[in-house]
Length: 360
Image (tube, rainbow, N blue to C red):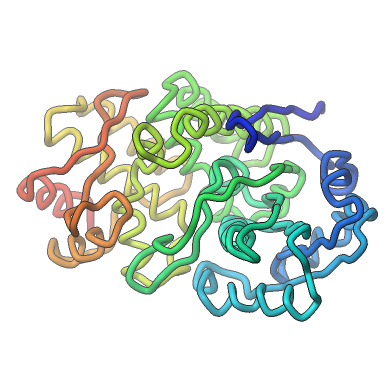
């Protein structure tokens, strides 16, 4: 299988995304970035045992190689883990020319990127995503963050990586639940930007869930193309990039309300997309058959289609702490049709009806 490459076009901050098998141990692009520099690999014990030794061959030219291992899970995307990174970098006298390498899923990518954004006012970093969700979404676009108990990803910075290295062979070791979580973001990309891609995902769901390497590489590439185009058009989410949060206002509320890590991010987004589609129907934007189609696709991907049984007030309280909220009032990404989305406030009555129909 050949290596596929595309670029995120952001002027002087542009960078390549490389997608293919066996990239961890034979990446010329990563070797060039590591040459003659202090390199810190940020990972967790689970991923380190599987892939850190393989990655070492691509970092052979580093003057210093440091391994920083964080606890595994969304619950640890917090200040304590961030400070652990800073303490190790400072103790080892890492300078402003150092390179951080995020080896892991979305949690590792987000927290490493945020550390790189603020360590000595900004150092270079590389994304080496090892989960499907990270390969198709969180590793691309420069959003970095940690969670706060009151809201997900509310403390962070925009900081673009120098390289994204997506080795699809790492997906073979994912538990089925983690694989399904990644499918949620792929379904999202199809729903908001490319109905043809959504149809391909529906057709290939069985192959994707079985980790067919060719099907995965094709789907990862298309998702990255969609996200790269949106990021190039709106790097800092002033407009169209906000539509990438389809399902996320509900989803982030579910994650925060249950406690980070109880549901995987993709699971919460799956239920959130059903809620957002239901809300779109109630506001007369989306036809009911499209809602039912999306509900069926999300369920077939192994994802939940209903949120927790909370009160309207509890959902609104959680959703008011959201990056799209204005002065505490939540806004939602709604579908006008497959391939077209918008961001707006919604009437309480419609939101209440959606929450009643799609939770519990």
